[in-house]
Length: 269
Image (cartoon, rainbow, N blue to C red):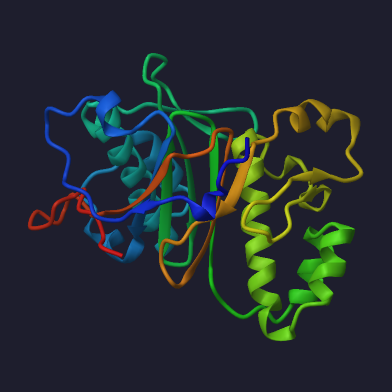
């Protein structure tokens, strides 16, 4: 039986702030997905950082990206603490050999995926493996070069047939979709993006081209659902997951250094 593509699913945009009595199973439906948006404009207001993240930020000392890394990592830990029901300092995150971050809480049924782009970070939380990627909507002077590197032969031919005014948008959409798929599989860019055909239809059928032997097992684990998600007008966002979401909630995260604001206040779309 056909199910609706992600782009056709209901997006819940107005939620009541969770209470301290919430439990993990009450925070997110089995097939629901929460997408948190973090504005990096408040990076300098951060007052705490996990020691593991502080060590990574220290490598960027003197650069503004260090402050953004602290905020981005702390925001993700704060979001996960909300679901686990613990203090943000107690959230443990491990990384696979491919760099995929995982919540180190075996009895907690949540998985997450994070991404960043100009001025923003996003964190998606679900009960099944998933991947999210975002790009800031912008002009691409080197769109032709990017297209030749990341698109499959079929995608490239279709891309050349579209109006020049929307070619940059198509490139950003294809890139975010491919990244989302690879994140869901936990392999990252170890798999070249030009062997994954995702297309631009609301419900995409993912195909592999010129698949090397070492990626056969990865292909068998392919996410079943892939689509674009509307979050903010300036962002192109794609989501890949192994289960069809029952609903997608878009939420705003606010720095814990802003006491006048509810840290988990939702944005009204």
